[in-house]
Length: 184
Image (tube, rainbow, N blue to C red; front, top):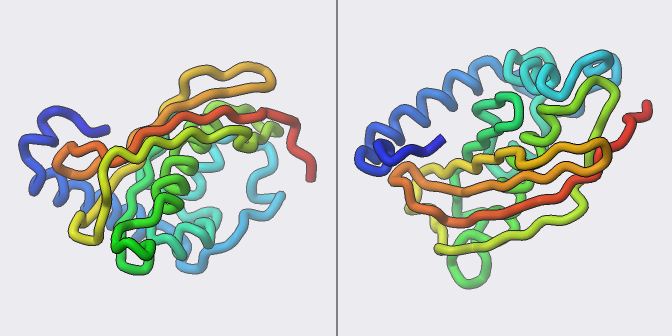
């Protein structure tokens, strides 16, 4: 999570973020894919993400396409890190809002998923996004931090922030997720 100290030392924060991402990527399976039912059977949401970070199940293809990855998962908290690039630009010369939304939806959804027991799944019902600052490839990395707000039997909510290594806020969001029994 970004702290006031991070905002005062952006170069150190950037170096730490890059080192954390390199350590995660070194453990990931090289080929993206979709986890098989056998790979996730009997695992809680948190255990599924721990297995992904340990390289036991493949990272999702979308993360490769959009150049971001899960770097940290805890119960009710998820951090994704991404590198905004020219390939993410809109016609106005800044990163498309869909990239912001995908990063934040991933972080908030995984924060929710990390709290679910084995056999439960979720889907996003609503996503509210506030873009507060333009983003370009001049910003080397950003982090989407998702935090659980409420988890009920059928509905869960979370909030998220997209921040740079200097502590600047680029977007914030909230989500409502539907929780349901997973089927094969």
